[in-house]
Every structure is written in C-alpha cells, then in structure tokens.
Length: 113
Image (cartoon, rainbow, N blue to C red; front, side, top):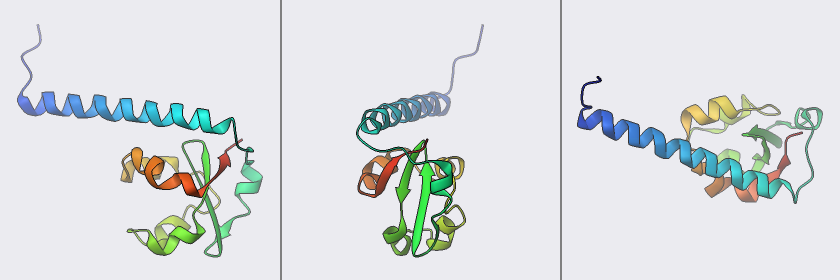
C-alpha cells in the first residue's frame, strides 16, 4: 500500500487537478468560439512577424498581439521571438491558462487551421 500523502503532496495534487480542469475549460471555450471565426492558416500566421504586425498562436487560437507588445510584462522581445509561430509550449510554461481567456479575447483573430 502507498504511504499517506503529506499536506504539501495533497496540496500539489489539488493544484495540478485544478490546473488540468482549467485547461480543459479553456479548450472547451475555444471550441465554442471557433464556430464563429474564420480559420487562419499557418502560412497566413507566418506573414505577421514584426513589431508593427505581430500575430502568435496559442492553444489553437491566433492572436494579433501588435498593440499588446508594449504592455507585456516580460517585454516585447519575449513575444517577438514567437511572432508568426505557434507559441503554445512556451506560453503554457510561463503563464496560467486562464490569462489568455482573461486578456486574449479582444486580440483573437481566429482558430489556427
């Protein structure tokens, strides 16, 4: 049998479960929104790679982050490294999943095809 978990282990398991549920909720919301927007191809995404025209993809959604670059707490260079690309892996390592739901809605271009 497995030994009882410590309070820290239980807390971490709860946090992991909450994060997984939050990611699933974000994914479900994105699926609903996709039905109302035009899909963006990878070729189209790749055209938007400058500080004057910057798009990124996160979790299957494309965002025009041009006007957000100056407000990004990590600096605009952090975003520009992924301009015109799928930044999901890097984004998820550095941000909580709900941040894109909270701030990204107004920047959304559409789903990535």
